[in-house]
Image (cartoon, rainbow, N blue to C red; front, side, top):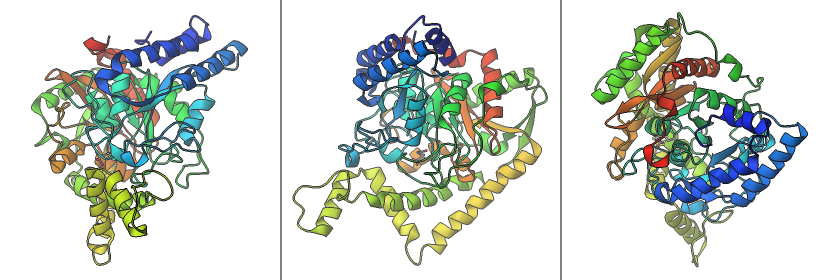
Length: 484
Ligand code: GLN
């Protein structure tokens, strides 16, 4: 049952061949059996799940069910859930129970989906390996010595091991795409503003965007239709009609112009990963696409620019965790300053503190112009690079990550090397455009992801291209042997 696609599960539910309760029990049992090896969930919610499953079965019975009614999912623990702990991977929020649901959670609930639990993640979504979580590292189901990627590493591991058929993630600089690549999944970072950020704990507000993580483009399309839509409670939410992505999946890619940025295939890219990607390009050519070399001349600026803007925004966003209003509070504070200092000092982990310090410095008087303003100007330059590239081609193709999954512990003491994991993903967030990672094959016995980047609102096109590729290949439908 756990190997089936969302469309297949939906059909079984609608034909009443299985009930949502049975399906939910099946996944809950898998979590129980396997998650000890993976640590992909922070919280499992069996009672809530079964209650939602019973309600879904009633809708299926009454004929009021939608396509995803009764389908279980896992929510990244960054989305607030009323009555269920939301930790954001931090000790700071270990005791936090939100009084309301994030819009994404509301929308999944309204569709009749069943929440299995909340997935582990890097603390406040800062990381590329899931090792910064207060709840411990998550293991990659393809090789438990390896990281699953981050920050949506728990969602990626849970879906890859088929403990949940689909999950949500968030992507500020690569956190949906990079774990999708490292765990052999399809993950989409939508155009900024398509998915509401209301109730999604903020890291860097001008970059954060939620999106689906699943096995196939077809499954991603279904959750996208459920997650997106205007939300007046998010001031950056885009007021445009929800698209039907599933309907856009069966178009030929004959004549599609694929741009390959020269800068994505230079130094730093593992040659074995490059080899896999060359094979994927041949597949696209056979399907009728044409390949063109393009340039993103300023890509080397993406990481330095991001590591000013993201920390600046996070230093501001995380100032709300003060030990007073919610979250962790230190024991026996002497006075107010001691309360602030020790609550934040004890509640936040090392990576979060590093970012707050960099961000506060970059925003301080005298340095603002030299760092923050400069970074904003370069953000514009990086965006222009994409605009120029999309005058020549329809989509861009490249690696998602320079390497396959690395080993747990390998990069954790070297933040700069860790930051380089996102060299191909980060500029996309700075520009606000959509990008998708999908399985491309294996190198060193670990999954390789390819990335497709499109212009604003090209989600339908990206999903179609991925779907065409997935019709011709079967990388995306493989399951790691120990979790079959
Ligand atoms: N790895 C990047 C970071 O650590 C991106 C994280 C994300 O997308 N949330 O900031």
